Length: 453
Ligand code: SF4
Ligand code: SF4
Image (tube, rainbow, N blue to C red):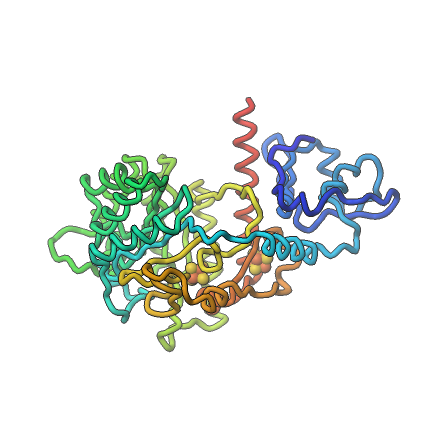
């Protein structure tokens, strides 16, 4: 046996070594994920973060329903890969995570700023969740003040995430903020959610040299005809927006910026997205920094009648899984790295270290709230701690969570719009999420093996 990924120190520090009762019955902890690949066997404990390479006999132990404790099981018991048959695994995880949360006292410094440079956009997607909201544009003066706020509150190394509307509709705010942060000597990277229409050679150059832009998420809705219709850009210059955007994806990739294409799927474009996946694969498939993922089109809670029935949602989920499977098979699904510590929060909304900065200088916690749920502003800082606390209220586990390999790091917050609409996992979404974990494990092991050859 060989440990190829170390433990989450704060978890194993609390757990210590498990006592062994020789002759008693044990079973694999429900957070133990086994992976068999080309010439290897591996086991990952998603509670402790330990990843092992195993021989056949060791793999058989962790693949058994029950084992009796003896010399061959010692290490697995001490290190929480095996637990007593009646052990409550979920309770153990809950106690550990609750305890870590209580001792993890934040010093108030922030790491991630999601900055809405504008809520205006050059596209008019029929499904936009910001539709009907006021267009707000961050003035140069507010961008200067936002930079002052960032410098007053930030850690030594930060991430700036540009969001909108279409963030490139106000690149002046991006220039101002990144110039000030750089001048202050703060190390930073940035990411962006953009439709990518407005990139050109000059902007890409600035994005690399000034904005430290590392990744752009670009949404595509279908092949040329479908995309151009859905996006309904405001321009009428005879150019095909689809072609413009695909050329810009090329530009970004050539400049070393990762592109993660998000496919927004609904019944109307499901078949067409299969064609799009092939088209994207043919054009960008060989690019290491290019990835695709799909998601079901967000249901807009504020628009009556837009919510799907339970049956419709289930049918659509199957189609979504089908698209995801196609992307996996092509090797273009972004595979997340295994975490270096257990997750204590779901997203920026319940993180101690993240805020959104809105175009008018308000601060918030969730990217879906641009007009309400403010927690303060860039001049007075975070003043509405009640709102901050509301975003930290987590949802209890559901029966489907029992035995789920993701459970140790799965955090769901009550105020999340997505959760409110789609609810907790059903079997297919749990399967999908667990599959992504298995992919991450396999990638880690395969990278490890190829490096050691
Ligand atoms: S991924 Fe889904 S099933 Fe698994 S623990 Fe999280 S909510 Fe539960
Ligand atoms: S919508 Fe949900 S996941 Fe997204 S930022 Fe808000 S709370 Fe987090």
